[in-house]
Length: 530
Image (cartoon, rainbow, N blue to C red; front, side, top):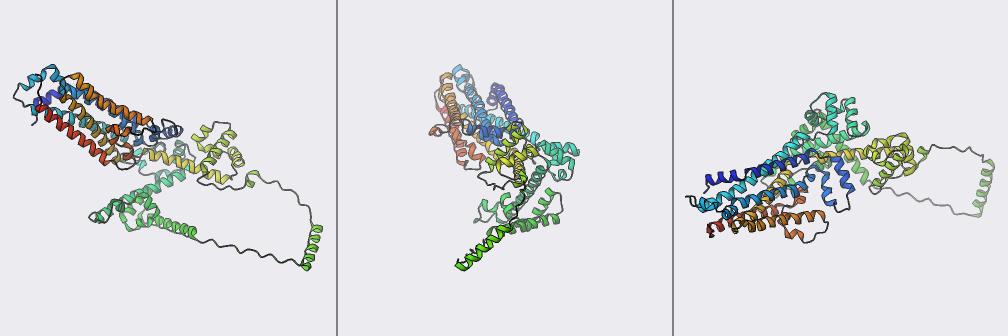
């Protein structure tokens, strides 16, 4: 049974440390989110590939991925500091100083004392990490609007100012940017693109969003139909955006899905239905072209040479030589005469780098400047040198530049996406890890009667777990270390990649439950030096 006086005493003795840790952790997490630079961190991660820091920096290519280091390192060490000192202050410090003798001389039962203290530690840790998680949600929503809506990127901000619209309103209605030439130009500049590439990017983004909204509607409808069907797996019921892009005919079965897609385009349902039908026809044509058998060429049959036709051939050749007239030499344009070279997945990256280097040479600037702003590639001087260097024609190089700009912009968009469910599991996993750590410190606090010994064991073990985690982060091959720490049960990589992580969280919860239960039993039955 809980004791209100003991709970009040525990709060008064530990609230300052709790408040400091909570504010510090919330501030750091918010700072991580607000200062996140999707494009910049992607470049850093690419540069670090193959080094000892590649494991850490590779996660920076997404907002939630960049928070992995906070959840695995910063939040863990701050939590350990709080639970170690608080656990010792709650029990063993009072035993060692003799103040617990006064508490136990009152009518309050020993079981109520230890139960109240253990619940205070559990509840204070839970409240701390709940506040930290909410701070992260708030920071992400205020900075990017990506928790409840689509991310507000630099182009949306520039276009919103041009159109005198609210950024959040415009982020949900990108078709308004398409309808204004000046807004298109300003938005393109904000994303380091020209209007040609930006128009391609914007159309692709609107299309994907319309299919995403429609896929969610169709999935909800399928859940209503197959929820009680034991033969249907969750993956069979859910319709992803990628599946809908491959099979757009599924859209035609749901009026609500058509309405959702039409809203993203800013058009009527009938117009959107026509748009979907045209995409279905285009896919069918592409499928037919890909499966159409190639006709074999009939080999030419050469005539058999005889003495008679040999004489006729010799006479013909003599006549042709006598009639031959010398033709003037025509000098063709270098760019036009450049042979067309095929661009494939294997050589695309190498060709793009060659184009970037050639453009930098032609314009007398650094290659990094060209990579940061690929519109330089379309400069006539740069195009002339690039065609000579790569063997590609002008259209191929422009298409390659457009594709690279669109791909870069889409990667930034994906990096700023915020999956609330993934964030929830990260936060819950961290909470269970810290509760498991706190149970170790609390058990040591009830097991020993001296503060120094309890601090050495109850603080040493959690800190050892943390150091092992740091070594794992810095080393690519740390075989066996994952079995020496409970921090591996909080598998952030699996959570971020939607892998299997549930049993690890269950194990952390079981550790906390067992050790807190053992602490209560041990303290109730042990002899205290009072």
